[in-house]
Image 1 (tube, helix red, strand yellow):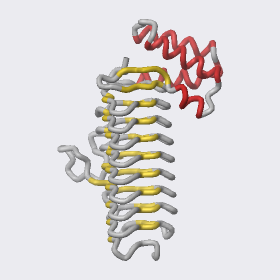
Image 2 (tube, helix red, strand yellow):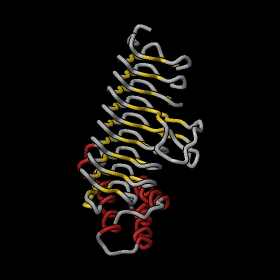
Image 3 (spheres, one colour):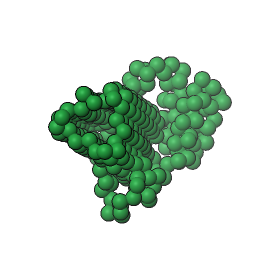
Image 4 (cartoon, helix red, strand yellow):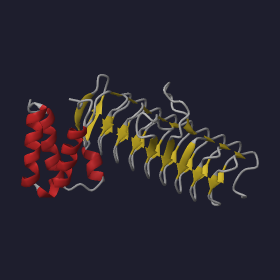
Length: 262
């Protein structure tokens, strides 16, 4: 395999597509699976039961599939699964899952993950997210599609970050953040909606108007969460063009376990 640098160490048993490029001094363990077109940079370490899809670009010094930073971990056969077309920059650390949860840490497709990002055990990162430099996800965190996590932001264990959320620089996220919201600070505060992100993603003016109504009901009218949820439910019938957006918010509220940032 001419694409593997002669100084790289690839263990017997690793399944690496012939089109994969592996840089100098990289180390790939025996249970790794790497799909076509992926590039592994110099000095990367890929260990554990790690599966990486197609056309990923993994920059130098990344550590993927190391044991979780969990004292309960006892060497169980847990996994890390990474999808397709992700950019993973320098010094990122993604850990295996644990048997106390789903047993797998999952990163989807088309994510832009900058330097020094840490994704801990059992996290679920969706598709087309952006995690800026030094963003840190504790164990069991879920980040939905097209969310943006600002640099130096820490996300508390078990927190859920909804789709299209934008979290600002150096934020402390210790409660669930509903879809479409823009948050920042320590303590965290909801500053408004990620309107520019929604416009860039092709949301119509009608859908954005309904999302604004949901934001007002949750954050601007002094309603209890139960009252706001009931009012949001009524929006679906009145605005069928935004029914999927309403369903997304209601589903998120139903699944929230740490309470939402308010």
